[in-house]
Image: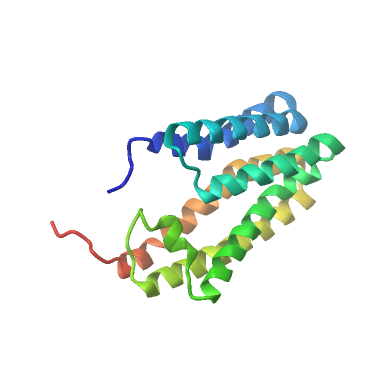
Length: 186
């Protein structure tokens, strides 16, 4: 049975820092937005842990990388580090997914297994697709932050990456449907 009692906490931990970053950027620029991102990520991850007594792997990795790269951004007064953060996170996730797949253990099954059940072939295919998608998105982030203004990069980070994720996930629905098991009959 899924734990829906605290599902709002997961959404808050996942989306709260991004929303706070975007608002802070529009109000005060990249350095202020980076400070806000670090603070909100730490506070919301801590709140999530206090309410659920667990931290999922992805938000924990994000917390560590936000603190490291956000801290470097502030300390060195160099926005390059915060712009690299999505690239680092996406590449790390891709490496974990493809690496796990290469040893016969698709990590996506562990991460998303409570959302739906797929046969082994489905988990392998979905894991590979997500891994490759994360690599492509990391490359796109690199191109955008290196060739465009900070303002455009922030809009891409907030809206472009989310849009790419939504489109990608929608394109995976046929695969999920084909490989789904234990679908309750109506």
